Every structure is written in C-alpha cells, then in structure tokens.
Amino acid sequence: MSLVPLAALLPHGRPDSFVVAQCSYGPITLAELRRKVAQGVASLKAIGANRVLLATESAADFLAALLTTLHAGATAVMPPNAQPGTLARLAKEADILLREAPSGDVEAQLTALDAETSRMEFFTSGSTGDSTRVEKTLSQLEREVATLEAVWGERFGQAQVLGMVSHQHIFGLTFRLLWPVMAGRPFAAHNHFAWETLVAALHGPSIAVVSPAHLVRLEGLAPVAAARAPLAIFTAGAPVTLEAARRCEALLGVLPIEIFGSTETGAIGWRQQLDADTPWHTLPGTELSTREGGLLDIRSPNLAHGDVLHSADRVAMTPGGFRFVGRADRIVKVEGKRVSLTALERDLTSLAEVTEAALAMRDGELGALLVLTPEARSSLAAEGRFRFERRLRRALADTHEPSALPRRWRFLPALPLDPMGKRDRLALEALLAEAAPREPILTALRPGDRAVELEFAVSGSLHWFKGHFPDFAILPGVVQVHWAMLYARRFLGITASPGRAQMKFRRPIRPDECLTLTLEVQRNRVLFTYRRGTEICSTGALTLPV
Amino acid sequence: MSELEAEIKRLIISALKLEDLTPDDIATDEPLFGDGLGLDSIDGLEMGIALRKAYGLKIETANEELRQHFATVGTLARFVAANREAA
Image 1 (cartoon, chains in turn brown, blue):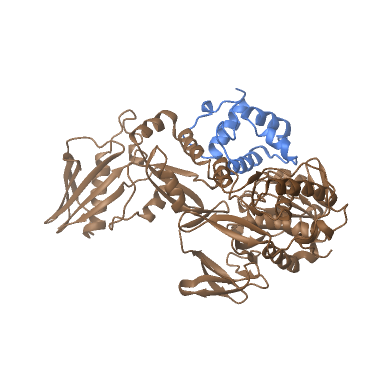
Image 2 (cartoon, rainbow over the protein chains, first blue to last red):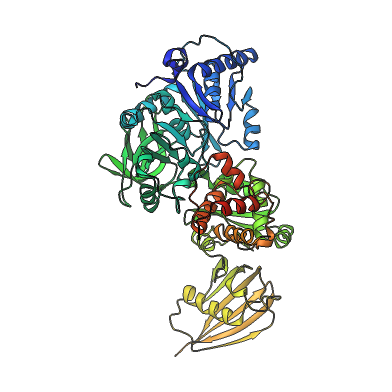
C-alpha cells in the first residue's frame, strides 16, 4: 500500500471503510474519523481558535484532535507531559484544551491541508533548564515518515501497530500514529503498560513500539511462539543494554530496532545491537558531521528546509554512521525521557522542605541528594524515608512525570564540595551508590604548612552509626583514628602505616553533625583534633615508624 | 493478613528497595499506585518482574483487567493465587 500524506488523508486518502485504529470499543474507520473531525472543525472555527492544546488518553482521539486542529487552520500544541500543572500553564497561551476526540457526527467535505503551513509545537528540555519550544510543520513529519517507510515499510504489509509509549511525545506520535496511518496500518489506540497485555494482543502480523524502560524489564516473561512474534520492535529515548536486546530476541523473537533522534530532529539514526559496540546507522537523507569537541551537527529533511541543528550530543563518526559518546550539557535520559538536571534541581530547591539539592546519575538511575530544613528532618524521622520521598515526588508531580523523577534519595547534613568549593560530582555519585557510606561528606579543605584542616559532615546513614548503642548512635573512636590516617595519607602525603595511635575523648560525635578535623605533622607523629564548632570532640596522635 | 498477602508485601518491599518499610506499613486495601502508596509505572514494571520470578506467572490478559489486579495487595494476592504455577 502506498504512503498517503496526512494532509490528504481525510479528503481523498483512503476508502471510507479503511480501519484507522482499534479502540477499546472497536475499530474506527476513516469515514467515522472524518465525521468527528468535521464536527470538531466547525466548533473550533466557531470560537476562532488559533492555538489548540492536545492531551488525550487515546491515540485515536489524539489523531482526531490533531486533524481537527490542523483542518481548522490552528496550531497544535503538544504539552511535554499531561500533568495537571503543565496543562494549566500551557492552557494559558492556548484557546482551548482538547482532551478527547470531537464527539459530533457531521458529514462534510474537507479539503487537503497545506503541509507546509500546518504547524505543531512541541516542548523539550533545554540546556538552560527551561523547556524549549520546538516548532514543526506537518511536511517535516511527513518527510520523516517517508524515510521510515522507505527503509522498513516493504516487509510490514498491513501489520497492526501496538504501543507502550505515549503518543504525546515525538517518538510515539511518529511511530505509533503518523507512520501507521500514512502507510495504511491500523494502530492500537490504547497503550500497554505491561508486557503481559501487549503479548496478549499479538494477533496476526504486528509491530511494537516500546520504551527502553519496558525493554530492560522483560525478565521472567514466557517466550512468545515464533508464529506470533512481532515483525519488529522499535524503541527510542535511551540506550538499551546488550543484555536487554538479547533477552528481547530470545523472548519476543526479534532484536529491537533502536532509533536515535530528538524532538527537534525526529529519527536520524538506527541500530540493532549485535555486540556492545554496534554503531548507529544514519538514516537516508540525513547528513551528519561533527564540529569542535566532537559535537554532532545534523542536516536532515526532518528539519525545516536548509536548517542545521547543532546538537549537544558528543559522537565519534564511523563509516555510514556514528557512535554516541555522551551529552555536552546537563541533560540526562531517565527511563527514556529527557530531563534537565538544572531545571529539576531548581524545582527541588524550591520545595519548602529542601534547603539544598543536587542530582546525579548512578547505574542508570537518577538520584537526588538533599539537605533538609530542621522541620523537614523531623517529618522525615516521623514519616519514614519511603513515605517522605513519595511526598516530595508528589509535590513535583504537578509538572514532572513520575517516571522521570529521582529513584534514589539521600538526605544529607551537607552536600560534598571539592577542594575548589564546587559540587563534587564523583562524591555525589558515590553517595548514591551506597545506602550506608563509610566516609564522611567533605565540604571544605584548607591546606597549611605540613597541616590540613577539613570540614565535613557525618550523615546519619553512615555505616559506622549502625550497631553501636542503637538508642544513642555515636561515631566509634576506631573510625576517628581510621579517618585521621586516611586523610593524612590523602592530603599530607603520608605513606607509612602508623605503628600506634593514642586518643582522648571529650564529647561524642553524633549523626548528622558538621565537624572540623585538623591534621598536623610533628616529627614522626600526626596530631589530630576533631571539633564541633569551637568544642573539641577528641584529640589524638598517630605515631609513624621512624 | 493472609500468608500470601504478607509475602507479596515483602516482595514489593524488596523488589522496589523500600528499605525502611515493613509489611505492616502497607495496608492490604491501600491503593498501590497514585495517591495510596504512591508507586508509579516503573515500579509497576519492577513488580511485574518480581511476581513473574516468584510465582512463575505466565499470563496474557487485557489492559484493564491487569490494572484491576494490580490495584492493591489484596487484589494482587487473589490474582496470584488464581494464576501461580502449580508447585
């Protein structure tokens, strides 16, 4: 079946009986879609809508709402997520919010759209932390679909398209909705949340469009019989591990096709991982090059005519493609969603409970490290960590999608700073790795003459606070000696192991206190003093072998 | 609380690393998602893996039904009891 531009779909694209989508209540045909759109166009024109915000649960409703908007000559605005706060903010600059398909049933002729002037607006996380508006014409999306169909379409026939990603984002919109509808393949209006339900829907030739979050969580699924295996599984948004790709092949019969792209560029590359180092192939029509620093420049028919997109993706070019190296800004991918660390840190810091916030990635998971107000510390103790965390997550849920929020949370007496006084990224990551760290959080370092002064905080979660006097946790003396030696090695260049340690206690060191440690070399001894403010906690000496 | 309900609570706690919760902190009829315990879609996927591994669940079902089965620990326990692999 040949490709029909979306611009021509309703006027004369396909027979009236053509099944556009499978909804929970049954199939929706082109004739039914046209009647809904005709009603919707009349309503939008009646209120003179110029900008229409689209947020629907069903992809079929979305298609109807999108076509209604474009046929009414208005701009379609795609919110970055459907959280209430996000919709309320964007609704202010739109004339109407459409949450479902127009319900009417009007017979009317519609004329073909001008794809060059039919406009859509997307939002994505920008490097400054503010969300960035990305404008696209329908013709850009139609050109992208033409490329996809030329590469893969031939072997798909009229397979149904099933989804596990939102149609509100560019990847889902293009792969679950626009490509199928233009190529004459019915798409499933409702997303699947679990593999069990997607597998149950594999009747006849199928294509699955899934998130990396789903792909890395296939474990334990019963293998699907070869006859029911999907023709292809597409995914995009974040790297899929080689292990997950292989498990997908073993259980679902095909290696996933990973798509490389962004809201701005659409799909520009693809790969199927055969080994851990499989490079990305550039899609036909797109031209890639690198500028200074190995940053990727993109020329593509998916962009407005003649545009070059200077991305913040660091790559290494290969024949016919590239390898992804990393991002040059503070944008990370969390469960396939683009998250600006700058914006999220700002939003965390603005919570009443939080005085300081830092974010870092560890083992592919986003973690938040927070310093709380004294009141919030009491709530944390009263509510318990989990419920307190979820309360913070809910406070952010007005504008952030839950799955793109931090999974690991650390509540600390202070954030680690490097000797230059900047956030210590490696220390932050280390704090996320271990629930019960063994070292304190360094916040300042003042070198002297054969001496050094350290400021640090002892988090209540320290390994050393566990076990000793459960009702009155204190930092054991042996740990204080160990730290004195550790930092004498690290900051004073001591290489020998101490032969003997002496120590006097004045005041116990308790969880979540901020302290100073001074270390001073005197002949063959390292003298150390732990202080809290001006009060001495302990003093001691490490004797080095002569 | 039935033994299976208690077991599922322990499974949720370990699969989602909710270290500071105990089975008694989760009410059997408390909604797991949204305003109750506050789990999200990623937590749901992690629970799916844990349940498949623990009970050998080999099920295919429709979206809406699965949502209802995952509503609370109580509904989940009934679902597991009806679908678990014979020991």
